[in-house]
Length: 473
Ligand code: NAD
Image 1 (tube, helix red, strand yellow):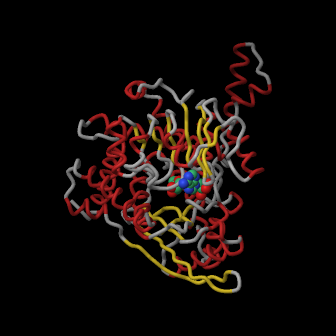
Image 2 (tube, protein in one colour):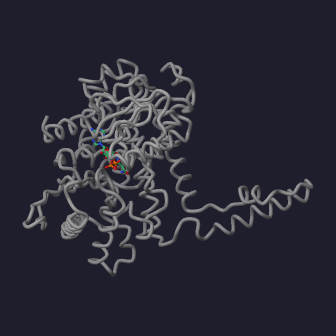
Image 3 (cartoon, helix red, strand yellow):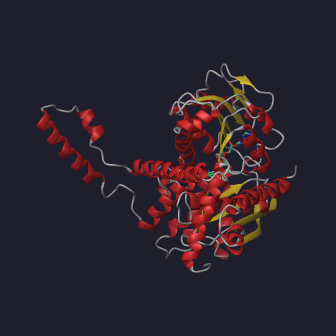
């Protein structure tokens, strides 16, 4: 199937999910339309010098909803990118931000290139030129539109974006807040790099903590011992796999671009990463079995499947063969609407992307706040907290007659660093948001899936924003 058709299907899937949820709300049709439609899409082309000649690059920035500003969403570098895909991803950002109470509208950007075919210098040229085009049209800025990393981009590209924006706006005191996911030395925040994968773990752990939901799936409570398969070992997939393993889950299958492996005894992630670095592939790793096709990993016998690569991976074609009991949509849109109906009938619990991968935008929000306030989280209170804990411990020591070891004292009387606060804020967000979605899912018999519940919650919150703006009654 062509990537254009895939983009159309993806947008149609998102529209279908929205309509299903919208039908369960009481909002007027005009308001629901306003929430659903994409407000603006900027499509542009620019030339870059490549090899001996020039190449014309196609790029997009879609701003789905302006009900809150700035709008926010990643930038994808992919040669499969197309306008419908960008619009679908931008709309998911709107709902995602509402679900985790991050005060942004949704956006997304894409550059139609395969970054693997570009040198570092060429990628820098593309990123800086893309940023300059956005600046020309007021499609970037700390109060307007704040990009972040996505498929094919990372902290390096975000630092180039920030640097380009600053060159055009040296007078703006909060200019660094024009993009998130930057390197820490360029105004980034500790914990952003792993945030999406860590959020996936916090979310899955919370889902698995509800004994009655696990019982329905024929599973024990808790993430410990759950057999996990991950598709895509990039930023999101690697960190989701890492934190799930550290949380006691067993990694039994991994799929990457070059193939897939399976080991029911468990795969040690760090050894696998070393093996991949040395050999250039995840294949032929220890006692793990190579699978015939990389897509076969999706159909492995496991408890939790984490697709963390791209959209449209679980379709009506392979959904009947899926054996996982839980699917955590770390990627955006990995399950198509047709597939979800099949999975629902099979009793598979799908944890929707607009909730489970919201850790990235949550910590991006913290980074943006840091850039506006121009102070590292924890800098002001850390020593004060430490002193207060220390005084309490001294009192306890005096009253109890027991003296703590240096190690015990260090562990207990510790003020929070930036990364501690970021993890804590992310954990609170993922737990709190899941409870909100689950309440909607459980309360109404008509709300069949967690996805519909998440959409209903998001639509209701966005409708309140419009009402507060006085746009709709
Ligand atoms: P990434 O580029 O870091 O990693 C993606 C990985 O998937 C790569 O290693 C690639 O080789 C692999 N891959 C591609 N096609 C594959 C296939 N068919 N089978 C197996 N592996 C395949 O990208 P990322 O930032 O980790 O993003 C992954 C997904 O997560 C995307 O859908 C993105 O929109 C979503 N997401 C990312 C973030 C973020 O903070 N980066 C936040 C929310 C959602």
